[in-house]
Image 1 (cartoon, rainbow, N blue to C red):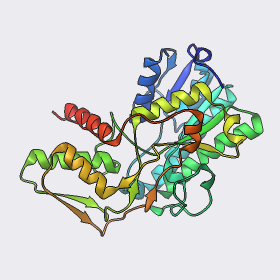
Image 2 (image 1 turned 60 degrees about the vertical axis):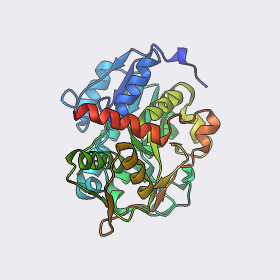
Image 3 (image 1 turned 120 degrees about the vertical axis):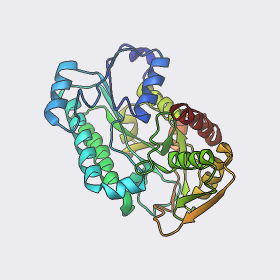
Image 4 (image 1 turned 45 degrees about the horizontal axis):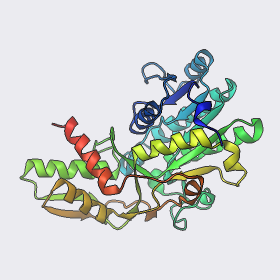
Length: 322
């Protein structure tokens, strides 16, 4: 295993540093004493353009790369903008991973998503279940793009020996989340819906897509950031591939139904109206619980309970909507 002292002076390129995930990783790295960053916004560097990415890597020559840049969204966005989700994500990851190889990057960590696993895979989801069955249709383009990123990292290791590997977080939420009802994931959407219903007072009910029966796991984004720091400092590609896995899961190992989640959010926000389920809308995958035994064995565990994380997220949401 590596040590922090080996990495503190390394030049780190964090792709997607302004997003929810990237900003959390940046905060955690800074808190841990890291300061040698190379960062670019979309207006400075369009990751979909190969020539721009190659020019950036040739000029800056980062030593560590963390790929948190992606086009993301909930069921509605994934199912509506299917071509954009597969094209944009394929291009972003392909350009970064190939340029990292060409410029001799020492370590690259690619962030994927739990949607890479088959729709009806056994629960909890083990790393070995990748590509064992068909995917959930609503987010298939995004999932295929993420699987391609995993396999890019794996095969750049197998052919070239590049120290590139992938981490698969479960459903994330937290500071800097997306609360747009058309493109957000379920938890931030619930926070916004219940908050607006409470503030408007005239609204006595909140409608939720689906039956409320699917089960989901949620990880506070600051806990994910700690996990990425842990992996960066301690784990190399060989540690995963020698065990026969292409990626490592990051989650809590705990889940609940969407209905239970809605009840928890309503309680935290103090919404006292009716919760109504629109069963004509899709539920998505019936259950997505990650098997996190491998990362637990390595020494990392999440710290933030779901209720505590939702309270922190709601407090932050209120500050930007006051």
